[in-house]
Length: 209
Image 1 (cartoon, rainbow, N blue to C red):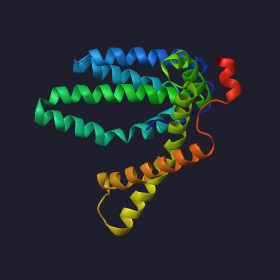
Image 2: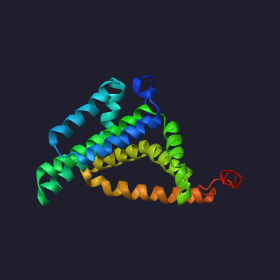
Image 3: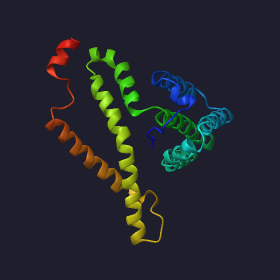
Image 4: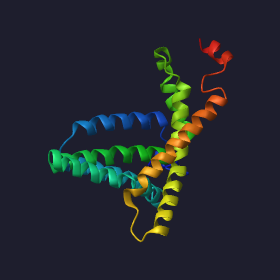
């Protein structure tokens, strides 16, 4: 549901990826502590204002990137309406919209290569705990690059459903979409293993050590 970057320039494009990710992390921590619906609603309004500040070129792809959240938000509200209360579900739904909206805004205004380089750099100290920073950067790159593929496949499944039924597909295409995604993951892992995996070259590992 995240969107690839749109071309600049803008005030958001001029900000560094590190600063944006730090702001996203701080915003998520704050959002998790807030339960007041008016405050969360105002936060969502602030996120929408960020998109509006970039004009139509960000507004349209931003809404498209958030569209897959509709079913998730509905399910969250419905679940909490049954097990607890509607207010709790609405608060959770607003948090999801705020956090994903901010993350989507960052991917809209930051080149993918810059995001990957920043995440890899941030994760470098975790090498001592056994985490490969290159693996984390590669995972992020694959996730972002796979978004257009996933959208196109969902659209194709929707068209195939409409060709066989007059009803809207709705969540009926979720299962085949998930199964096809898992199949792609298997093929991708086989391709990575066939090319030596994601470990750095021997001479680079010796240099880092």
